[in-house]
Image (cartoon, rainbow, N blue to C red; front, side):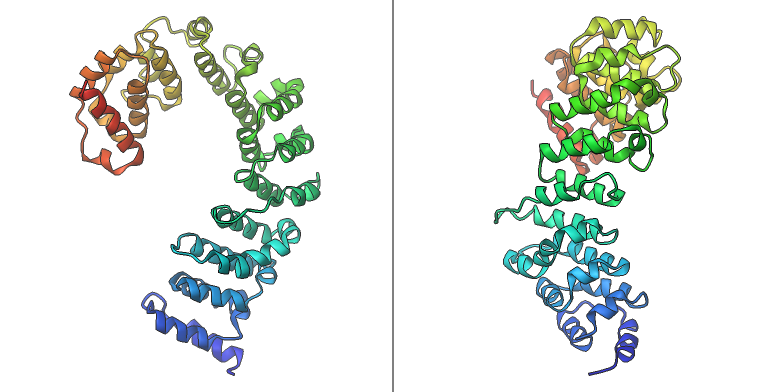
Length: 391
């Protein structure tokens, strides 16, 4: 067998940009046999090893996984990134043999699950594991609720908490959600910018009882949350997901308040709740808008719509209030169809409360353009436009 230094020098000099023949790759694997883990942990060779994996077929990757210790490598900084790359590569492959994946890739993770979750390097591997593991619909997937319940403690690392949240995106667990709320929804964490997006995810994943728990824990310090640069993001997520307490949220809205996004989110809620008298009062007293709501919300200072108020306008389109659909037609410019805000407004109009005759007449005037076919949301909008053209 060649020495490691000899194998390392050989491996470093392979140009994988021009090597992609499966037989040649087989020969490379033969040459590095026995040194796979060392090459994966060596900063001088790991990049080339990642390129080799990306060029490899499914069986070549399985054979590699038979030879390496996934558990051991996952605990190392360089090794964990290498294992992540293996998971990412398998995730985009087709015609997989799931029995082989379970035996040689999933099993080392499952057998060492708790240790990997709490390790600062390996916890990233666990997240990649979830993406593939929960895609396999051919087997009964294991529930890791008990393992996570055991490790959920106040002194757990941020990385591990992110992994728990990641798991909840695949497997719902009310008990885990509520335990996270009890431990982490307090000013020590919710005012910390590192945790901000975690709480947004937590709120979006929560059921009504969990949301009520979040609300009750935040309620005594609500004004502090509104005025905090990071806590306000938790409030915005809660307002959107838990409109039940909209009157309470509104009671803290004042003219000239620091963060106008809170008022905007509250106004959107009132639209969705059908409380249009309150919407009218807000538009008049806070936004100082008496008429031409569409123009004043979107086109007050520029010819290009102010995207901040797009969702509110779409809510009003659905209610067909304040002549907003007629004004949309009046101010519409054909170049809007090539912008994200334009697609949102068009979708809001055609799915909203305007009369079908109005939608049909407008659909016939729109110059669609070829670019609409290239985007998923564009194709959906195109189908809407076509359906109204036929009326």
